[in-house]
Every structure is written in structure tokens, then in C-alpha cells.
Image (tube, rainbow, N blue to C red; front, side, top):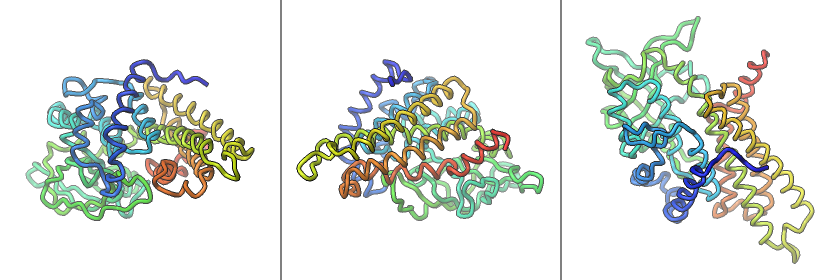
Length: 385
């Protein structure tokens, strides 16, 4: 089925991104994986291309684009080439909605120009060693000083994407105790300057995939944060996190769809070139049947992702619909990639081949942003169950 979600502007942008990846990313991506992240200058290069600031208002040096479709294009081209842009997606897709919705005019003036240019890279710190999907259990504390000028932050965070290189981190912390009636109350978001005394980047977490994206443990020991760096209202952190979940989960769903599309294309090329028992792997009936199954599932995944993308742009994507898209696209991508890797035989397990990296990179999409089990709970609740 022919896709209708992208127009000529998106395709022109796609061409630019594809050429950029081929010239400036593919040749050095293995080095990034070994280092654990791209060089800091790479993000400034993305800023120059306008990739970081696609949705940043023009007055702050961005593109002023309202559509999320340009981000989808970047994801598809990265997946097709078997590369990642480090923590780019967290910075540009996850963080910006918080800043746009809750930052003051003064804060936007301070942060958004650097956000768009790549001079200020952002991360968000929610997960703690004892807190994953249960955000209401966050223990990192932020106590207001006696004179009301600053907060003092203490605690620890883990699994923080982009945490090692970030210049500013949105830290979800407890500014007031929870209550038995409402465990979610008392959470706030502070934008912490990573040059602050008492802030430390701890262990860099060695993951099975997404090797070019830094993931770190962070600690806060009496870190002073000016009240001017409180994002939005004190005590409204949980509500802010909930408001942004639909877009975050759609972003993950789109990544799953892009990975499934790429896996199918990699498998098609490989089975036509690779010979077994004197004939191409593609000549065997099992290969044809497996790829027919994959092609059909990729079509369904893509249709779901495209429909959800259109709904987001129209302001109609619900939390339940985003959960459905994330569940279907990421679980489906896992099935497709596994089958396509199997068709590669032993080479599918070698990281030189894009299919191996897709396999490792995509597995986490069923975990972060809310596990598949959490998505099922949300969907069931929407059904009145």
C-alpha cells in the first residue's frame, strides 16, 4: 500500500538526512559505539543542519515546524543505515515539549537558542535505582532554602540517556512528601546545570544495544538549583510527565516501525546475494514464506505508526491510542527483526551487519517509555476493565 503520510518537503528533507548519514555518520559510527557516544561536536553539527531545532520557534533560532513527521523521517533514515544519533531523540523529541509547555519566557530565552544549536544538550532524569515505571515512588529530594532563593537536591538517578554529556538535566524530584491519598503529589521538575557542585556522572552503563547512546548513573549531593530553574509549578511534575507520555510513546512506536522496515530491506538484499547449496537463499520456499509474513507485518506496523503520527499532528492522539501504537509497533518489530536475523544465518549475529545492531537496539523499545505490560494495562483501563 502506498504511504500518504509524507509530502515533498519531507522527502526533500529525507534526501538531505540520507546524504548526511552516508557522509558523516556511517564512516565513524563504529568509533561512536566503542566510545559510547558521538563526539560533542556532532550535536552542534545537527544544530547547524536544523535537526535539533525542527520544532523550536523561529524567534529562538529553530525551524518553527509543528509537525512531528520530520522526526519520523530522521528515524527511518537512521534505521535504514543501521546507525543512531546518540541521545538526539531524547533531546529534540522528549525534552522540548516540556520546555515549550512549562518554561517561562525568561527560561525560553536562556535555553532554547542553545537547545536548537546544540550548544546546550538536555536530558531528563526520572528513573532511580529503586524506581522504574512507578514514578510516584521517586525519592530524590529538593528542599527549598530558608530564604526561598534555591533548592538543595539530593539523590540518585539511573538509566539516564544522554546523562554523561548533557549540559542541563530535567530532574524529577520530590519537593514535598507524598500522601496516603495521593502518592503522585509533591513531585517537581528542576532544570539542573551539570556544572553545579555536587552533581556527578557515575558509571556509564554498558548496554546490549544502542551502544552509541550514552546511558549513565547520576548522583546529586547538596546540589544548589536556583528557584529560577524550576520548570512550571512546584508539585505539578507528575501531571507534566503524564501530559507528554503520548508523544514519547509515539516516538518509540515510530522507531519500532522504522526498524522493522529496515530489517525487511536488509533481509531482502542478503537472501538474494547469499548462496546455500548452490543457489540463493531467496530461492528456498521457507525464505519466501518468512519474508512474505514479514512484509505483511511491516505493512500493518507502518499503517499503525502512520495513523498515530497523523493523530499527533492533528492534536488527537490519546494516551490509550499511543499505548496501542507502542505495543503493536515494538512487539511487531521484535518479531520481524528476529525472523530477518535468522535468514542471515551466522552473519546475523555479527555486529558488522546492520541486522545484528537492529536486533540489539530494538529490544529496549519494549521496556523504556513504559513496558509492554504497562501499555496493556493502559489499554485495558481504556476498555473499562
